[in-house]
Length: 218
Length: 218
Image (cartoon, rainbow over all chains, first blue to last red; front, side):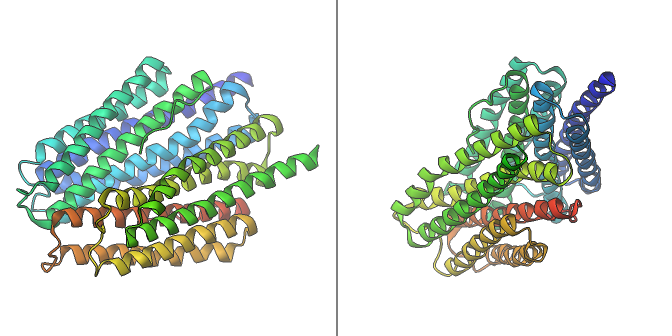
């Protein structure tokens, strides 16, 4: 009985880590679709989001069943509660990747981004995918040093996000208001994606130490 | 012993409802600060956000303690799990009200919004405050008809949000890119605020019925 219970806890963690890998792939594809006006890839991300939502539902059901049937305490309880939070964060990351893909689809066959802006989004995409991939690894390893690394990556994302606003506010911006609106929202999607990845890593710190790291600046 | 447990469950729900009332007040004040370039009121919202975060922390600790010590099942377990989700949603509503206040502070003494845009934000603020106030009432009453009302209010918010984009994309927009960026983000903050209020109401439907209503379109 006890073994089956531990297997269920492991399965829950694996489910979340797999979900992280899926939203990493989603953001990678959405970014590629955005940068290359690739409609087929955008459609792929959009149609796959429902699968990510499904994993979240199953993770939540499993967490609920564990609470109801096993009444976990201490570290085990922290795992289950963190999984409930984590599933919400990771699903939201999937939604944000979906929003990027929807922007690519909405403007197709036009590119969404002015040429000189594209490299920043390429970099935001790279950092975002890395954050989600690292969050998956942290869920599997519960390695606190690896969890701390996500904070540094998130700082890089915040710098890129801030820089986008400097570019937008520059008097030389000559791409018009519609492009500015797109860039504003897209930059925000990447920045929020990163925040959720950091939140996932912080919950793992809490699982291991029993203490939440300081609040995330939003 | 059983009575003390029921008291704790009631206290947890009351804490969340009070938190909803606080973020309703925060959005009301932030909207007033935004529309009237009222720096003092903006500062008030900004300094009060830490108190809302504190209530969230206490709600989460209480939920954790209930799970660990009482091992609730069935409806009681749904109450505790929904409180964990709800506390996250309501804290985020507080963050979004904070972002509105920060925008008012950043541009002070200049108004953030062009004159003809202000009435839409006045309305988004009104709908947002109403959503949070209704969510508080739904937490207290568990009234399913009242919970369903939030969906209609959210549709009104979505319409306002969409309309903002029509105004921004209009060729006659002559307020420049900086104002367009502010309006884009602010409209998004109100729309997300509303989504979180609906999510809180949906969790109450789940508490009562054991079934989650269909997914929120984001």
